[in-house]
Each structure stands twice: as structure tokens, then as C-alpha cells.
Length: 365
Image (spheres, rainbow, N blue to C red):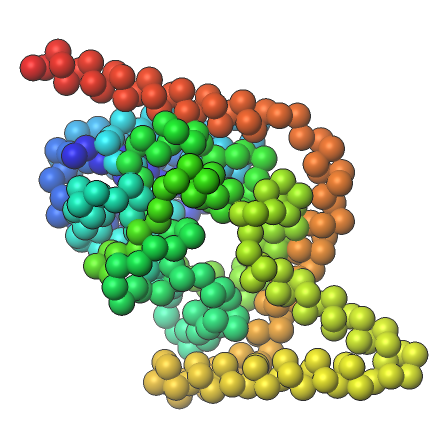
């Protein structure tokens, strides 16, 4: 089967060389792989790195670099550019700040050939430049308390079905049916797309033999901005596609609201509610801090900062959600239906690519 291995990049020069090396090292026959890369307006050397890879003969049947020139400069728009140009029977999405093992493509193809429509595996976090501080941030990101309870973040023990997958491989017919990404969304574009896929009857198969990795933000500032952005788009997406979100997405927001409300009540002479909330939070905080030492089997002294890092991340996420919900009515009013039209455009592009590929195979015969 032909595979389109796709990635997009925005100022990812520090990670791109490693990922492109992973592409080059794939065990699946390169003659059956095309590489589709999309630059999303980088101001560093990301575009040059992709163009240099494009000009190098690695045996792939097609290597192309495109630029996102649409009015939306977000991930969804860039991924739609990749979808429009992908010609493989299978389309695999891999983020630029990631790492994939040698047999990643081969194992995805095997499971799709076994009858699945969408497959993937666990996606644990890794540290690009390991030191005591970045390993502490990694411990915060890996913790269920500090980050997410999403099943795809951890390797599966056996084949199982989830609501979503990271770095998934899709039969191209999936995009022929549901279309592309909603370009009005940022950070939550995959939630909304996967919701449409589930509504269309597709299942997300998580396979234990498939694994990929994502680099954790290596500074606290970047991690805070990431959490704030995630929360912000949860707030906005709640007004467009609430069913694509789970209640877990709103836990930091609820924590923030209860914390602020208890502080207000304290001002009026009732400190007990604030005491209860902080006591419960402190208990979870300390348990997860001890858990980081145990699970990592580490005596890293900077792990002692985790009780301070966790609330900073939670409050950043919660504030983001609050701001998103406040802006929601104004943002929703500005939507003009272009996202729905774009989804259909991508669907037609995928269908046309399928027809061209079929015609080419017939002419070769």
C-alpha cells in the first residue's frame, strides 16, 4: 500500500532534523512512501530544512514541500494543505516536534491491512535536551495530575479502541467521507475531526506494537503558554462542537472557579471552603509529587518543585478556558461558514486524488 507520511512545521528547526532522519530510517519500503511537508509560516530555518530534505534522494516515490498560504495560519489549515496533496492509500499525520521508531510506518500499514480504518498507538512524552530541570517538566507533563488522562498518551497493553489517537494512520477513504480539518479551530482541530469520524462510524484502534513520541516543552514559560492555549481553545470549541470535548477538559476551569469563589467567600468571613479546597488539592499534589519520584525511580531534587509547577499549569489552563468562554459569543458571531466550505473542498481534493491515482494505475497496466 502507498503511504503519505505528512508533517507540518512552524519554527521547528530544532526538532525537524531528527524527525526527517526518522522518516529516512523507516523500514517500510521507501518506494511506497511519499513525504508531504507543509511550512506554516516559519521565521526560522524550518522551510530550508524541509527543502533540503526534498532535494535529497532517499528512495521515496514522492517528496514535496508546500506552504500554507491561506488566511488561517493555524495547524488545521496547514494539515488541510497536506491532505489536499497526499496521494497515498494511507495518510499518516506526525507532528514536527515528535519522534517515530524505525518500524512505525510498517506497523501502521500492517494493522490497516488487517482490516482497521484508523490505527495508532501510545504517544508518551520525551525530553529533547535532558537535564534536571527539563526532566522535572517532563515529569509534570507525564503525570495524570499535571497533564491529561487521554488514553493515547500511554502505550496500550493490548489492542483496544479509543475516542481519539495521536499520530494516527487513516485510510484515505476516511477523509473522502468526512472531509478535512475545521480551520476555525486551533488546538482542538483534531478533537472536532475525530468526532466527525466517530459519527461516521469509524473506530480508532490503538495497537500495542505502535508507539511514537512527542517532545515536551523544555521551558516552564513555553509549557504555561501551551496550557493556556489549550484551555483557551477548549473554551471556544465548547460553543461550536461541545460533543467533541469531555468533562475532563473542563476540570482546570472548574478548579479555578471553585478556588476564586472560595476566596470571595473567605473575604466575607467564611474561610472553611477555601481550606477544604486547598487541603484536597494539596493532598493530590503531594501524592503525585511522590509518585513522580517513585515512577521515575529518580532522586532529582528539582522534583520538589512539582507542587509549585502543578498549580501553575492548572491555573494557566483554567484561565485560558475562562477567557475562551468570555470571548465565545463574539468569536462565534464572526464565523462566516468558510470552515464548512473548506472541509468540503478538502474532501473533493482527496476524492480527485483518488481518481487520479486509480487512472494512473490503470494506464500503467
